[in-house]
Image 1 (tube, rainbow, N blue to C red):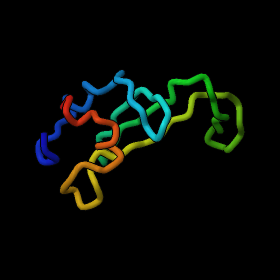
Image 2 (image 1 turned 90 degrees about the vertical axis):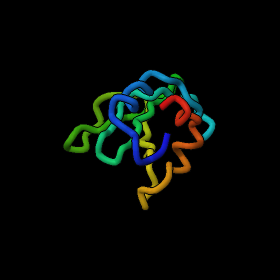
Image 3 (image 1 turned 45 degrees about the horizontal axis):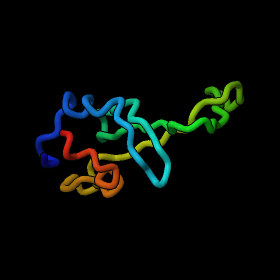
Length: 90
């Protein structure tokens, strides 16, 4: 798999996979086509307070992180994506 031939269907196949990201177990929950990027959700029980559109905190949710798939030059996979060890599944 190279950066040039990534497609959305291949990326969507990653949803549901568990990965280790920066020492934390996470699950791929969404793919952002623009970027493209992966949205990872922490798989542990720790939650964070999520503000609404007005900045008011109303609920606790698992933390999420966005991981870019391609670097800024759009020539290589992003180092954070490579660290997930998922590119071989594409």
